[in-house]
Length: 406
Image 1 (spheres, rainbow, N blue to C red):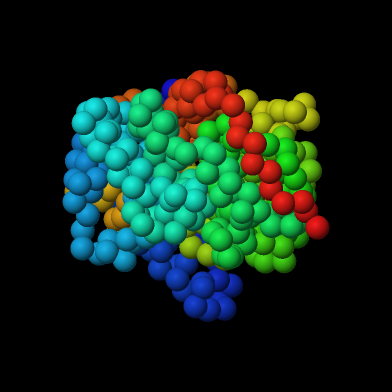
Image 2: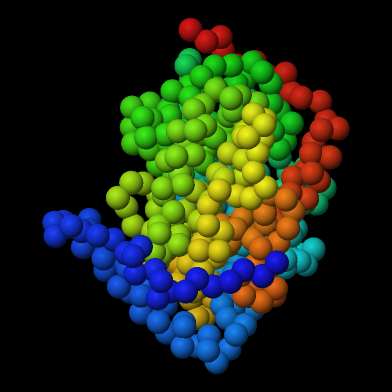
């Protein structure tokens, strides 16, 4: 089903009202709205000429992503410890754009990712670097996207489980690396790699659900650790983790829903990550991707709807009209440079907004704008999740035991 573009002249009442009290936050918000207003005005004029707008710049995005897979701009030198992430961001984006990679390139990527795997388990951000839960998630997801037997066999499952045992804390959480910080990302990354590769055990995740629930704040979202501020990325990690643990009923779902629906910006159409923050393209997934998960919990309580509980058309408008870079790639917000991270998560959010709960397709603009579907928990294609499960579930679960909780 094609979605209609909002009538932008009717959106004036949705603009931010500073109530004559200027602050740094309010001025930044008004500046963003002014820049988006100009983009909306220009778009309205162009659409009078071309009714197929907005258009996903598919070819440009594909060319940029393929180039980045082989040659990164000099500014990415600071992300040397995130090279497995760069692989994931590019591979997932290309997967959403339904690009098939040649076998030789897949083999080269597997060889690189194997070099990032540490002898004691887990993956670092690059060859020879210490293992880290976030880069382990990125590497395992990348191997699942590649989806060959060679890719699956690259994972040392026994050592990976031992790594997870080593970084499990006494209260059920996980440090991001040995001796590292604790936050809810660690739980999410540990659960994703454990369930994708069939190394999950009840003992390994004993007490984890209770720790995750302790991160839900008075606002309704989840914070990085107990007592901190609710945040879009952490909220996604929290609800996804509880669902993977089959403990979604432990959180306050009504409070979470109330908080997250208010994170969609009324004028811009995209999501903010925290209260009183600016719209950001990456939260198209971190916030938007939580809605299918919330829907699954409501369905268990016989409170199911047949649509996602956010404005899917408005989110598609923000991504397609405001976040595409002419030469390929997507961005945080107008005026910001394109980058691989925002390309990945803006496209992921666009995919979520296009694929409705009842299986129907809800595409803004031409049907050519349709992306492939993404799994709302792992953020890789659903078919890739099933294929990985078909491989790893044939294998025995390793028998490493985490230390007893004190």
